[in-house]
Picture (cartoon, one colour):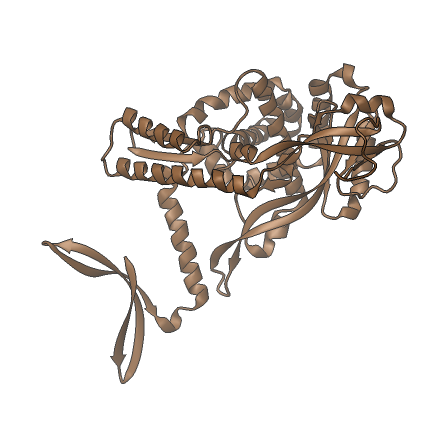
Amino acid sequence: MFFRKITTKKNGREYVYVKLIENYRQAGKVKQRVIANFGSMENLSADRINYLIASLKKLHNEVTTSSNDEIPLELLTKANDIKDVIKNCQIKRSMLPIFGETMYEIAEAMLLKAIMAGEVKKPVQEVCKDLGLVESTSLQFYNIMKRLGQSDVKEALLKNRIFFESGNENNHKITIIHIFKSYFEGQSFNVDTTNNVYLPENYRKPIYIAMALNYQGKLLDYECAEEIKEVPGLVNCLFSKFKKYLNGEFVVLDEENCIKRSTGFLVAKKILENSNQLTIEDEKVLKTNRYSQISDNKIKEIKARLARVSAGLETLKADVLVGKIKKETMIRKKAEQVIKTNQCEGLVSYNYSEAKQLFSYSVKEEILKQKQHTRSQELWRVAGPMIGKIKDLNDLHIQTDQFYQITDQLNIPPINLYVDYHYSPEIISGHIQLEILKAQVKSAMKQIGLGGDAII
């Protein structure tokens, strides 16, 4: 199909029309026919063309959703296992009194979706329905996300993590508060003068997070703010909250260098590699393991391999679609061969529906993120007399790298005009809480051999 401008004359005036033309074959000859008439060029403004492009993209997504975003069958059998883990982690026990049965079911479905299909870009209510988890509205999911970031829910989940994750015998251990800058990423839509929605726009908002971890590096609680000047208040808030439950020392890893004075806790400042102060034997030096991004060249190499896999699987997908390959064993053999040849084992999953004769595949984004990061050691100098305690914290794993970029899990983008209202501080806070819950459940899954990585 293609567009063609057609010029006609009427009453001595020239008119230019735009029509969508399709080629077709009849009686052995190629002919053309008009599929749609888009009217006069005079009426086709840039905004209207943008709207048309957006509409066609939306239609394309609707047509291809069943194949591109089809949920692999293995997800359906995984859900019940993860529900048991959530129950055993005491998460359900903490949240049920606050949410009630109906709303808890929606909250649990949202957590399951984040664990199993966090990278699927469909609206959360559609993914949860596809997974057979719950049928609910986008507004209910939005309100649940908002509740997750509110103080009473945070308090209930904090108690769970302190007493279930850490145990009463560890109340005298050191607690870490890590300060860092993060970005929340979402999407919105713009509108033209006639209120027609067109072209999505990316939304990116910087935030500051103070994340609390126990001596084992497990996530406990958090506070977040939009301005760096608010960060000292966040730390004081966390410190006051934790002193109700814990008797140990507190060390703040001040990555943003924003804590000037402290009361009741010790502040650690990052040591530069070439610093003259650096001596490994110095007992006031704290060693932590962090995860940083690998080189651009290595990332390009991984992406190139994935591109070759995508090309190979697209060819296979086309062969299945036209009926060239029908045997499931042959389809799986070819898919495995493409993935293995390009060294992408574990990075790409695929699914074949014999009933629908459809083949689909997807990149495991979370595993891809892990492969794009490498572990490194960072050194911090602690201000204060804490020589004996510091030794216990050497080689601590600071598992906060997943919070440096937080992605919208609702996928119900607003009109551009209301984007800051839609992605309110409570909603962003709820996303942080969801990520902590996700990490908590995945850690428990690994301990019992269920694996902790998303299947999609």
